[in-house]
Length: 84
Image 1 (tube, rainbow, N blue to C red):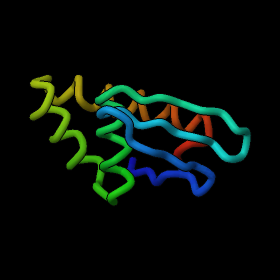
Image 2 (tube, one colour; image 1 turned 90 degrees about the vertical axis):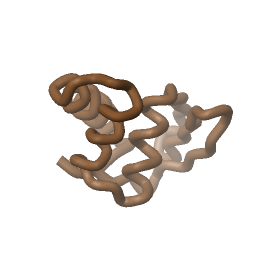
Image 3 (cartoon, rainbow, N blue to C red; image 1 turned 180 degrees about the horizontal axis):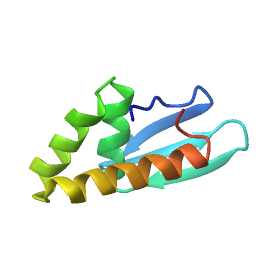
Image 4 (cartoon, one colour; image 1 turned 60 degrees about the horizontal axis):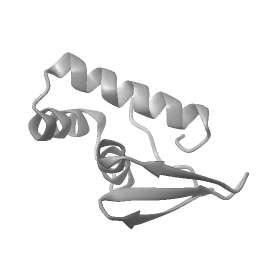
């Protein structure tokens, strides 16, 4: 599934990590390097398959692991209202 970033989210980059602010509930989130890469690619309009291929290339994991990582990350952000 392809996602987009919620309009209520503001974010900035800090040392290869993203800091997010959900403007609806004023909660802050900090993403690690993988999460930051995924969210940045979502922000630039990249599709799921491209993001998964980038995870495979950068982290040298197999396809199933990359899909699982992508899906788990996105589902958690969706659940928190950060992705739509």
